[in-house]
Image (cartoon, rainbow, N blue to C red; front, top):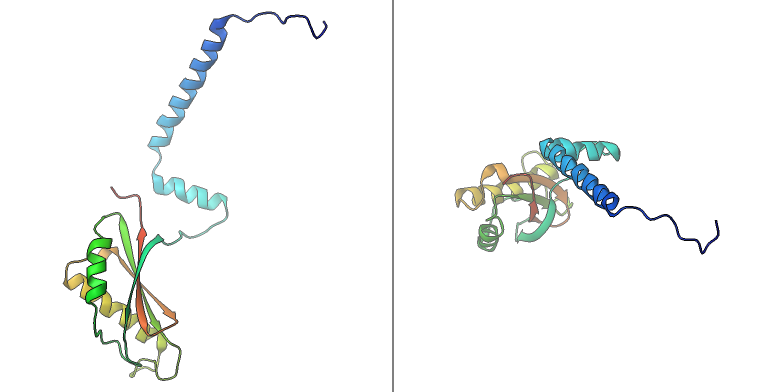
Length: 164
């Protein structure tokens, strides 16, 4: 057989049959994928890559409450954070993460225990309590975290997904 020889022609129905078979396979894969719990599927993907715990919600928007005095968790002005939270957390698929921070100085600690992380948690809790009292965010959609940085509380909005 030389290069110029024509290959034997294949019937047109063979191509159509192959297309139909691929469509059927795709359809059955789609049916199977809809039967799997999305959280189980995500856990399987994480396990496949060696990740043991779920990553926090991806931050989409940020706000901050500043003005805490050293050693205090008293909220001086949270009106801007409250207005931000009312609009930012309107979608029920989002989660609000409040990061209470201390500046790390010896003066910026809880006055009773002498602990910076406890003061940071108290600052985040004060902001969370204000938001819950004002019915801006449901308590189940708030996570509190502590950090070292400045005397503030940082609010981050993330997409939690999965709930519709």
